[in-house]
Image (cartoon, rainbow, N blue to C red):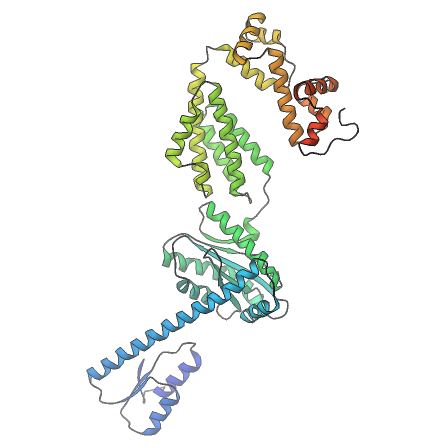
Length: 469
């Protein structure tokens, strides 16, 4: 800034003095004066002016001075950035050790000094995820400026995300959301891409930083997978989800695929992902159950003499493999396309095999095996001769009707014994054996083991002394 000595209201020296007192980073001043009195020059030097020039000043002289000052200011800014990077690196190193569970008095004391911790203060962690490549030196000032006047510690985690731990006292809690929204707005405008700012719960003690950081990571990863951008608070977006109900939506989806209903498939997929969006469900957990459904659908296609491999290859060409998916947006698109294509293919295959009544019989047995089934009843239901149906059934499945039915029931019993706490007698009833002794006999003939032994071997506790009853 170029100023004169004598000006109305405020002299040049007073302007410089007040700027130095009030501004964190006052400008560099050049004084132009018509007075060669040494006292003026001495007063200016005390205020650390960049230059004191006597009038008149020619254009060449002032031009050279401005070029020199421009270089000096540039060098100072570069030095500040370099120092800020060094400090960020040092603090980040300490913070990353702390959030990985490492503790040490010296390290904790250093972080306390950085945070200027007062007693057992409450802390909160903010974590910033930016999709586009960014320069930490560009982002850091926005974070610190958002909490200007508050004690905080800026760091960069091992994944390159910027974090900020701040004391969540009364002065911060009232404006933390406002500051986070403002930071998000500026980052989004400047970096032109999705930005997620996650805010943890408040907790006390330095060692809670690890938990606070983990909360923000959970929020960031969840919102990133859902393709979201914005400011998100841990308390508001992490709610428990009933995984059994979510699995029920997958089961309904599989049934809808079998029916070949495109509108129903789309609605079921959206309902499933609405459940996923409502609570913390790990992406890999969901992918595992999508893979199970793929396996089931491919089995149905194969049973109808279709080509499941062709379906999967077409899916891979269009959207890649399930293992390559890294977020929920891509997973939803993958799942919806697969189910629609599979539903259409199953409908075609069923149409081509409608004349084959035995397929319908086998499907009926597969669906109703838990009930009381007899070959004579099936023959009446499908308007066939019982003897002919028995021959056709064996030719199609490779097993006589009763053997096929028992095998189906035993396979379901094995699944229940592995995965549920049901008693042996309850398992027998659920798979179609009202007589527990008869069930135990059939199970042992098929597997060579008693149900209780099989249950124990599968990793479940036995039902006790009366487990076989």
